[in-house]
Image 1 (tube, rainbow, N blue to C red):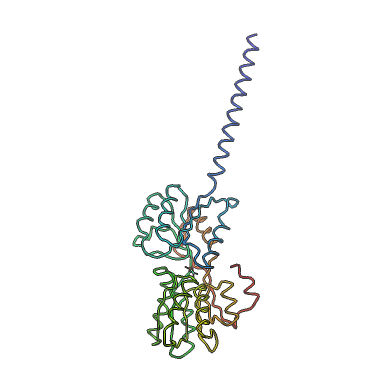
Image 2: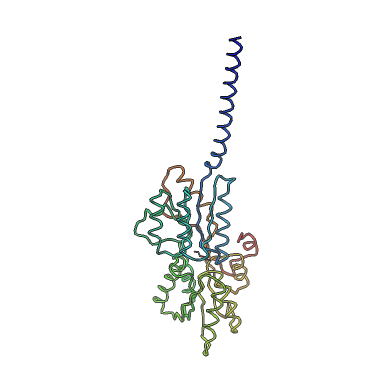
Length: 327
Ligand code: AHR
């Protein structure tokens, strides 16, 4: 009898241990499934341009659960204060990395110090920031906007004549605006060109159409050789306004210069309405992932990663190039 009781208790104990182990395993499994994902908080500027939409898409395509990431994506609707709020929320949520597309260069010191104190690496994407303490960000992935501006200006120099220029600037204090403007202003000084006016198009088609229309509506019709637009969407708005005021865009008319090289921009370039486009690469998701994987592996990424970019003109474009464009 004693033997039977012992056997029964031993069996019950075994079943109990087995039950516990099984239960523990399933709980651990469900936690580790989540914990194995790398948690990334992305603060995107908004959706002001076709470029920006493509940039967001590229990030969303790379950072999926299937590829090992948990993505928290915040659209700041063109406001720096919304970006700052999003970063603070990511810190509370204890993300592993913060990816920031900064709307402007200044005003990031305090919030990025908070991220640093929480030991969360920050990766800057697209534009740069102006901070005293370089350790506030781990790396930057984007474009060299000054180089882009210089490509446009080199083409303008080939005209070998005194140029009357209208400039449509992008969002003030953004690296894209500062770099592209710096290249133009330097050349204007060196070449003695006439910078007729600098308008703020905020990288959007609607605002550019409005400011360009206001400028053209003045009593005396301005003599314009070049309209230097700081992105494709501005070029779309400028062309619309110029044509409504009777100007011809392209050869023997006003040369519209643009940046980005979106599919729509390239189409207008092939048609001859945009004379020159300097590419700005929005598909940065894969490069951002490389930086994150480098940090995961414990190595130190470069300070800057610049995408390869090209210059397009009507005679160097084909329908094939345009149809292969993803954005
Ligand atoms: O910072 C990149 C610029 O921002 C792109 O040229 C423009 O289209 C975007 O909105």
